[in-house]
Structure formats: C-alpha cells, structure tokens
Image 1 (cartoon, helix red, strand yellow):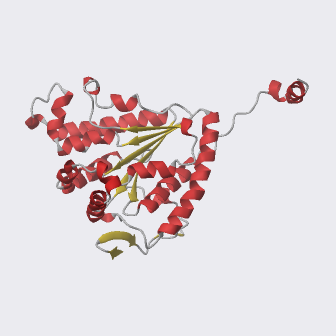
Image 2 (cartoon, one colour):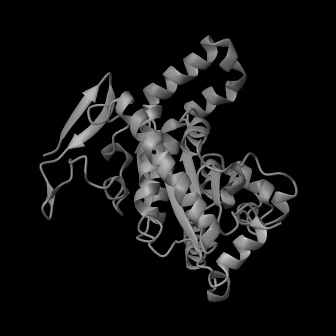
Image 3 (cartoon, rainbow, N blue to C red):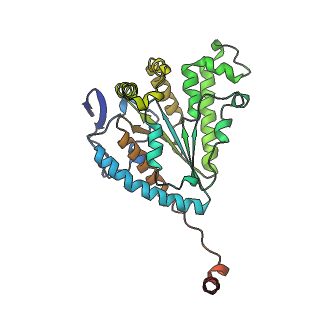
Length: 319
C-alpha cells in the first residue's frame, strides 16, 4: 500500500515502493513529464497538492532559474525554425497561481514570441460563434508560444457547474436548464479531443496543466488577499460563492481530465500548494518534452549564401 505523507492537512507526495523497469519512480532523476501525467483512471484524491518533502522552496526557485534560461534558448531556435508553435493551457481553481506562474516561467522569453490569452466570460460576439471559436482564433503563430490562462475546458467546467450559462450560447436544443443532459458533455469531450488532435497534427506542441490546489490553501490565499491592501483588488465576493461549489468543481475536473488526457495530449497534474514548486514543475515538464523535438534547429543557409559569406563581409567592411 502507498504511504501518503501529510502536513497541515495537505496531501503530500505519495510514496510507492514501485519501480518502472529499473527506475525508481520516486527518484528525482525521473522525468516529471512522465511522473505527473494523468492516467485514464485519474482521481484527484490520488494526487498530491504539496511535495515540499521532495522539493524545497529554495530548490524549486534555483532550478527554475536554470530551466527558464534553457527554455528561452529553445524559444529562439523555435522562432527561427518556424515549423512548430507551443500552446500552454493552464487550468485551476481561483488563487491557484496562474498569473504569477506565467510571469515567472516566461520571465526570460523574448516577449514578442509569447502571446498570453486570459479567457473571461464570453462576449456577445463570442456567443454568436461556437464555444471553441474564440480559442481557435487566439492560437499562437508558428514559432511562437501561446498561453491560455483558463482555457477551452471552461466549457465543460464552469458551464457544467452553472448550466444556466449554456442558455447564453443559444444552442438549438437547449431552451432551458432541464434540456442539458450528460450527452452534451460527452459530445464536448469528443469535440475538444478532436480540436486538440487537429492542433498537434498541424504542428502545435500542446501542454495541459491542472494546478492542483488544496481547499485549505485556497482559504489561506483568499485570507491573504483580504489582509493585504495591495491584493484586495483581486478579491470578489463571488470567490466565496464559487468556493462553496468546490466538490462539484473537483468532480467535473476529474471527469474532464479522465476523458481528455490522451497519449498525444496528456494532462499534467501539478502540485500547487507551493507556488514556487508549481512554477518549476511546469517549466521542467515543458523543457523535458521540447528537448525531444530534435528536428527543431536553426535553418541552414543556402549553399549560395554560404559560398559568398566572405564576399558579403568584405562588402560591409569596405563601405
């Protein structure tokens, strides 16, 4: 049986005496891109929200500095290569740390190569299109990184917790809440999977991160918002209303991840009670996956240009 280490009521890393081949899955050398992938039998309760026993704040902060430098170099090569784009999808409950994660992970990137999209309540114009439209038109160009701060999954999470929101989409078969059936959500899981498959088949490298925050830690962060004047602007009474629906959100997150975490489009479950650790893990997983794309290289100059490099230099030097 696994041994779960607990601290202050939070779930910590679960220790298993299991080896995959000859690799101890608890070894710090094991790829986080493998260790933190959601399985088809994904259960939120099986995943830690805090792994401070494994990585301290200081360690996570130091490692992030190194990893994001490597990512920034990869960004430069990818921009020149111009064959792939990267889409980073961040989902999590309020206060999970999405904004600060984006700030810290992409701190060393060339800002011209990163597009961040924060999806709020759909506008009237967006409601005149299908629910994936606003996400499709926000996709990053080839050579660029795009970040979705909240994503297309809001359409099987928030709208499922609040089915009345679907009425604004003006769907043909949905006239009132009672018309919303499980069949609609099953279709959306399939549509989202098809959407993501289309992206990766056309050069998008997709990352989906669920920032796994404990309810206790969310309470602490909401209290800090209220206590610190400079953060009070972030607070809304609606945060408390949504908090009362925590169990529903966890149920629907679990179901959505179970249905849409595929071999080519996996979800990564990020322990997020410690923001520093979450930032490092997201960056490290991105690095591990991107380094597998060995075809991403600087373009080679044509033979004609290469053969005249000396001539071009002389021309400039003799101006």
